[in-house]
Length: 393
Image 1 (tube, rainbow, N blue to C red):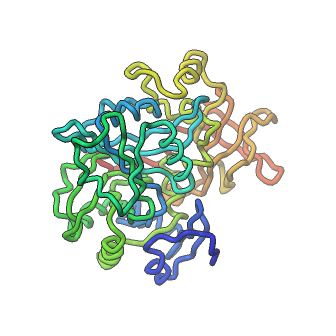
Image 2 (spheres, rainbow, N blue to C red):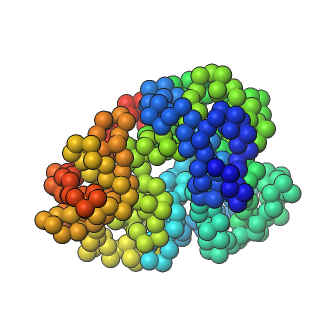
Image 3 (cartoon, helix red, strand yellow):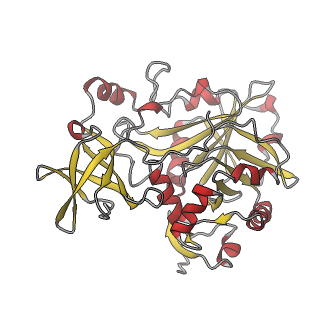
């Protein structure tokens, strides 16, 4: 495809040179596959694959009260984080609907009590998330390439202000995932990656230049996400290719994350879905933190229970439940599918769906309507696939 309205990452040309097939995604022209979705999927499950995820939003924040201000915007207790740890969470609106799912990387505080952190957000919601943060935090925005936040005089920082910088267009972000990913990345990184636990992160040298690495990902496998300047990103991409890491596109990224039952924003979660409905109750820390946007709604849902819940479905035969297909019980529509695919690893179709809470128990028999016919499905435990190679937190 060639849509002039779509943005391109700094890696577009080398990726195009690999004869990737492209698609529009979140306003970006992104590779959907290289050698084939199943082959790329299997590379990540069995060895190592890499994804250009430079389209995602990348924000840096620093200030003397960074954590306390961010606490108002998420249901998770960020005060528990130590430097070098991260928290997957969600930004909530007043109705406790999910504005976006994010990862906050806490980089600690310096001798002047200035706290630093990085937030990674979804590509399609970058502008929306930025606006929400600017509206709800006491922020001074730093224009990229004009001020280096590392060189700001801590004594001159307003104690009530958060210094915010949008690095989304200025950094390459690569995800290298799979059981062999860490050992391959280690060849190009100065710091020892062995001690880094899941959701751990650090700043170190990548090919002799500054880089940010995090042991996070969206595939259900071990691996790292690496944020660097564009020139370094292109060099690292080529080095990883030569090291045998398979280039992978959005197609494999989707099948991998679905096997791991990871939510896709805009399909499985959105601003009309609360974290308790979405099976993300583990992100909601009502007992250990104070007030935050959407808290009262979550308190009511917890007290009265939700009316609908997300479930994992296993289809019988080869019938694939796709997005928006109706889910039925006793001939009545009781929900709908949000994501579905034929699992390359498991060999049978799986799906995520929202259904009436009283029909959400594991083992419940339901049906999915596909082209005016109803096919049997069973509620099963999530995730559908769990890696044996992932490290613990």
